[in-house]
Image (cartoon, rainbow, N blue to C red):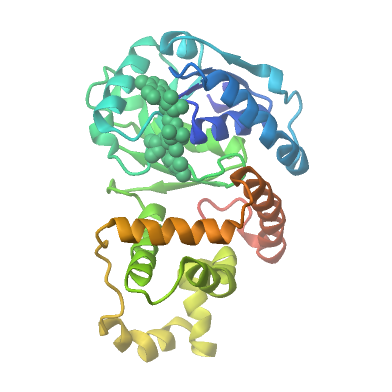
Length: 320
Ligand SMILES: NC(=O)c1ccc[n+]([C@@H]2O[C@H](COP(=O)([O-])OP(=O)(O)OC[C@H]3O[C@@H](n4cnc5c(N)ncnc54)[C@H](O)[C@@H]3O)[C@@H](O)[C@H]2O)c1
């Protein structure tokens, strides 16, 4: 059971696989990783080393060490002794279906197999597996070593036991699992983020605001509140003492106004250039690694603030 999960296998060690690796190592687990790219091992070790000072700030578990990471040269070797397997290969359905079947054929009977897919349906992902009951989606958020949310989504053939054990494992590595009870493409958080992303692209496309102006609107406006209260509770307060009922009464009619477009704009060369140039202007020559460090330090402080100002949320599944 969960308390016996000591060996974690990471299959695919790009941005997300490296994030899972760092989180698992920081919790004192043994990690065996595999990725077919010839440069993957060096990149993975560098990514873990880069995250380590940040993880030290959040507190390492007993026995946590970067030396608990082993890199191997096949999927079979990676999963042979695993208790929990996290798949993080590219977001291509057929590739994942075949890879999960390969993992399933080689993994010990008790092991759980989770996919980090951002939106593919677990029923499809488990379709080629001999033991589909142990296949589940565990969708994390970047940077995985810091952000607590992980969406758990079962397919038609995923067992209730797999969901429970997956939830318990993620909790044991300090995550906040949110069980999405109905399988839908994009799950919950990405659906929300995509809605905002589409609107932001339209605003740039139509020349209404720059990438920098839109980011300022999020950072200094909606985003600050969302960190603590999310969309619904934020609007509950927007209704004054009468809360959400008044808010819906007052602003409900505005929902009928065609403010939003919600259909993605065509990614024309012109739009791509505007978005890329805008982001480069905002980055002002600072490399991504430097911005990542700033983001990570900020996130640690922010998570501390959420804990401080919303202490009753501790231990509640999927709650802030
Ligand atoms: N980047 C994000 O913000 C994010 C967030 C949540 C979930 N995800 C999901 O995580 C998964 C990985 O995304 P990423 O951003 O880390 O991509 P990435 O491109 O950074 O990494 C993918 C890795 O998979 C490796 N790979 C290719 N073929 C493979 C195979 N057959 N077996 C094992 N590994 C293979 C590649 O060499 C590469 O290192 C995707 O399913 C993606 O949707 C991404």
